[in-house]
Length: 43
Image (cartoon, rainbow, N blue to C red; front, top):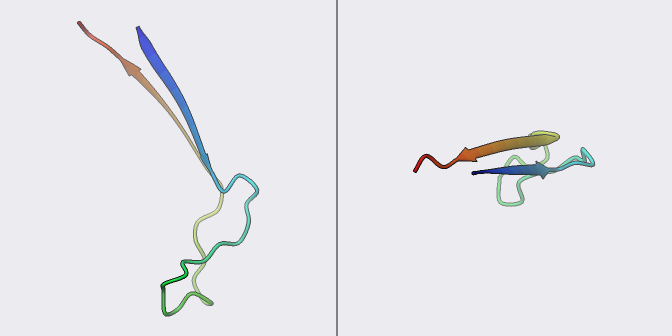
């Protein structure tokens, strides 16, 4: 048996900034992110 997972962040590719950073107006967060994982049980 296996489990597949698909995780996405910032799929609209908006400009995002870290609210607590002192230099938040100069530094932007990374853009789109997709991650796929597969877990396989070995019993």
